[in-house]
Length: 229
Picture 1 (cartoon, helix red, strand yellow):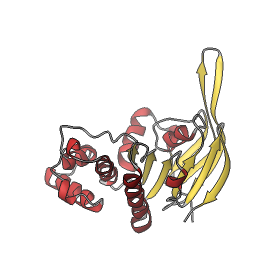
Picture 2: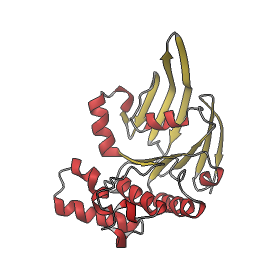
Picture 3: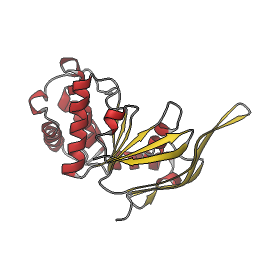
């Protein structure tokens, strides 16, 4: 099976005054379609930097990143923005929902960049909310939902445009244990039943157990790999 994501000899460094700080060092990684990959490592290990480059938020200093056959490291900022809108769904630790909008309106937001009609946007948002178990909460605003429910709205927003991949940065970091397990079970279901390719940054070994694979970074290098269920 050919890789959906191909990372070759990727390094990332920043200049701080006269000092050059290397965050990632010569990373090679293949992610097949339908993978659920957890990236773990201590603070400062480079895992979020790697996630951001896969998602087209950041670019490498050296090396190449190819997603679905397209070299994204060579795209301009405008081209990257269009590519992200078409191919990447984002799930963050803090849900980034607009408090004045209902769950349905929050989920519709990525579809405003498409040519879908208002009726089709509403329809797709309802389907996404039903998929995450919130079909009865479409008219609720974030302040009327629990933390776990807000994160599920965020996941519905991430999948509503049927992206090529989902990137999740500490998606359960702000949740209690029960809510975290509900969210992780949902992500696992989206991966196993719907074939969604996912990359998740987490510091929690219990969260990583929901992934198919676990990779560890330390000081900017991949140092270990393991498999989960």
